[in-house]
Structures are given as structure tokens and as C-alpha cells.
Figure 1 (tube, rainbow, N blue to C red):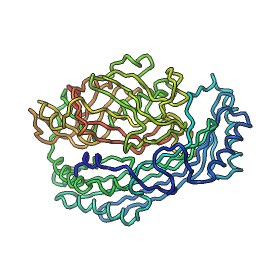
Figure 2: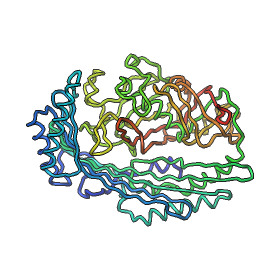
Figure 3: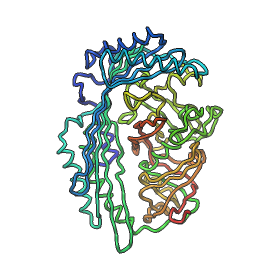
Figure 4: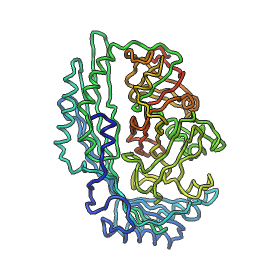
Length: 520
């Protein structure tokens, strides 16, 4: 089964961790998994109101993570952790206050609500203008990632054996020296309640298997590696169980052997054909981050700076060619950032960031919507843990398929002189997300519509709008691929968000190619 065939057939029903009675999807009425949730929430919200808060919410959350890593025939590490607690946000005197605790009792909740109001009162001395929250509908409901097999119900031994089997398959390829593999699983279970009459329970799952194949050729003095092209998914254990890992790792072994013989690239202007396993990261850095409103406003600069997409560009700036369309989507199937509701209690949705090449919108939360004259939040508020402050985080941001049913073979056949790049590599981008440089894992020369061999020492360099305006072909929906990252950093103190980026193979005309071995 090919990767795209697997992702098309992944299904939609599931089992749940910690809360076996929690129904899938949204519902108008729901019985929450813990009968004490409503009582605890009422203690927090009524205490905050009594103390003068004009708004309050509480998140009671449990986070479980498990990871297993191996190399050749050995298990290197096993980690299994769990964190449980609550956080309370309030608005008092027009200002946010936040406090949290891992002692989930009614007495502690009342104490922490008082702390949150006190912090808001102190913060208000520095507040230039009162906070404005966009209106939101009240919900009493639940939502969960539609998994078919709970990773935390699967014995550790089964996971280890599967990883060791991947390593063994790689070592069957003659010349492969090492293979390491790992799998990580995350379950995020949280209950949200607010003074605006919402009570929402969610159960989110994410899965990240991966491998790295290495070949050392002492005669050539060459050391080559290739990682899995499969990316983490918002799925259950079925992803690890059913994806064709053995086929994938065999191909990786053959690729590293071919990389030993690759010739160094000649720098200069060349057309680029980017496989989605490479392109998704370019989307993340050059589209996902600069369309975060707080970066555009200069209110956020941690973890890679602000944004060149200033407010005057909204609705007019030619971000890309006419076929370039980017959609932000917190509801995307298998997306890492997918959820039913955000941490403001806003029902998630999808919307265009770029339409027909024109930049038209940002990502917003309830407190940001009024800045753009929006009547509602985009639902992008998120905190990485119960003890972290929720703020604007990137949703799944994806390049939409092109207007024609093109496959990557069609792009190759239609191109005279290009470089095809697969897999994510090193990258660099400036503090406004304007100038960038990206590498990859495997590079192929395309001449007169055919792949003629492998290259090495390749990186491509461009300015964000120049790059996306140079896009003249995007593959069709049959070639759609969902990449993504478990760890997207932002904020101070830093927080991590998981996010996906879908795309199809795409072609970019006359892009500057660097030879990284010659670059000083």
C-alpha cells in the first residue's frame, strides 16, 4: 500500500483512553466522564466572579506521553509520563490573570481562582486598554480524535517488536550500517468550563513513528542518512500498525546507497519540483508563522521573530501566483492541531489565509478578532499544558490541490531542467519570515522530462513572495500528503504545539540553488 493510499483509507471510529464512556464527536447534551467536573468548575467560576472577575474559565487536563526508541537490535529508551492539574484564567479590571495547580480539589481551586484575580489586578496597572473578547456560543458537549486503536492499550512489547522489525528490514539492504527507529504517542484529555456557560470535554490523540537509516562507506569517506518521509498524524495506533513501514524503510536503505554516488550540484537558477515531504516545512515557516496575527502586530517575536505580512497587506498583497491557495483548518482529518474546540471554548473551523494568490487573512483568538474587525475568533487559542497560559497558536495550514489532476510524474515529464527534492532538511529563515533557505534529504536532477540521477549539497534560497509567485503547477488531490511537526515552539516561557501541513507536489520556476559544500 502506497502512502497516499494508506492515508485515504484511514478510518473514523475509535476507542478512548481514561474515559471509555466519552462519546465521539459533538453532541448537544453529554454526561461528562468525571461527575465532579461540573462541581469543580462551578467552584472556580463562582469564586472568580465573587472576587470581581468579569470573565473566568478553567481547564482541568490530563496529559499522557509514551515514547520508545531503538537502534538495530537494541532498545535505547522507554519513557512513559503523565501530568494532571488545572489552570484558571480570569479577566479582572480589563486584564488577564492566570494561576494553576496540580492539586485538583475544590479547596485548591478556590485558592487558585483568588490567585488568578490577584494577578490580574496587579497586571492591570500596566494594561493600556481593557481586553475585548469576541462573542462565542455556549456549548455543553464533548469531542475526541476519531481513533480506531488506543496506543496506550497496546503492550509495550508489541511496539518494541515492531520497531526492531523496521530496523531489521533496513539492515537487509546491502551497505546499510545502522538503523534507528522510534515511536511517540500523546493523549491530551481536558475539560473546559467558562462563565459564558460552556462546558467542553475533549480527548485528543497524536502518533509519531519514525526511523533513520545510515550508511557509512569507508572507501569513499562518505556518511549518508535518510529519515522516514512519513510524518506524525492525529491518529491512533492504527497509523503505526497499518502504514507500510517495511516498504518505506527498504526504499530509504536503497536511497542512502545511491546518495554515496551522487554528484555535487552546480549552483544557479533552476526550476524546482518539491515533493510534499519537503514542501510542508516550507509552508510551516513561510506561511504558517507569518500569518499569526500577534507576530504581524509585533506583539510576539519569540521563536523566530515577527512577520513581513503587516496589516496594510491584508486583502491586497500578492503573496503567490493565482493557483496558490492556503487554508487554515482546525478540523482537518488526521491533523495534529485538529480539535473540536480551542482553549477559548470556540468551535473550530477552516478559513482562507491566501486565496488565488492574494493574502486575505490572519489567525486570530477571541481577544484578537476585534483588531481586524472580525465578529468571531478563528479558534486558534491553545496551551500546551494545564499549567500554561493559552494564547494564539498555529492551526493546520495547508496548500490546496491544483486545478488539474496532475501527479508528480506529470510535473517531471513537463519540465526540461529542474531539481526534485524529497524529505525535510536543514533550514534558515529571517526574523520577519521573508528571506529563507531550505535543504532536503534526497535530490534528483531532472533533464528533458526524466530523472537522470541523484545530486547532493543542495539548498534552495528565495524570498517568501517571490517563491510562491514562482509556483506554476500544483498536483491534484490524488497526490495530497499531510506533513507536520510534533514540536512547534512559540512564546516566552516557550510552549510547544503540534501542527500539520498538507500539500501536493508543486513546481517553482527559476529558483536560486546553492551548493552547500561551497557556501562559506
